[in-house]
Image (tube, rainbow, N blue to C red; front, top):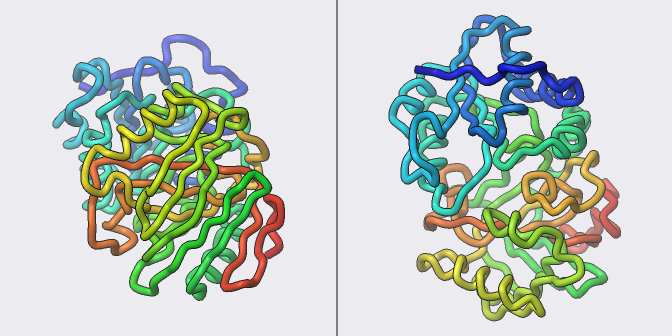
Length: 339
């Protein structure tokens, strides 16, 4: 059976972000059904989302993961997947645990197969609800659309930072660019808060200094890396070397990117476009939306980009203060868009 989320008053500070998610990002209609998947740690945010769904008047189900399976999840409970398949709209608002990517992939497979408008709020927290989720997503969408149109014409994107990044991506017209600007359609589910364009690059090379954050569960462990960055040297789209004064970070990142044969391969090249995200908070969900470049090693979102390889892992890497050029034409200077 589905669960109930709120047994106490809704925090009014969470309402603007929750309303933005339901009204602007997902455009939920009263006649549509929605499934909300959450966990005990995120119930306060789920309750605010649930209240907004009730305001719209839609039929809904809400599931608290711990009520249906032991964490970390080995798989997404069948009951939840079956319910999800009945909905036009869905939200996943929960914290990640190591080894749960398979379970989340089972969920997004249902989303993809049924063309569900899905908001992915992995590791959402109060600060993000008060910052990135309060963005003007229509304006973010206009900027993202302008940028992605230029990116689709580019053969090469180069980026540089004052902190040592000198990185180049070679692009292929066979590999699609996607826009996840927070305005979610049935063709592509998106993270919330939204605000990025991304592709799977044909090739990459150079040095990428991760002085923002790394993704997945390493993000919670290591947080903001400004004082102890991770320097990654990439050659032929794969990690050649890793350097950091934080040996635990270096070793855990190396272990993560050694999980399978493609875990150390650049699967994503992305540019954040959420101008409401102005500073690193040590949280990947929001920090990857900061205007600038981030790359990810592992899973290339092949079902959307057209990449012809797979990986069981995916870890994002965020830097700071980028200059970016599309085929030699500068589109960003010190983190500010010029387009």
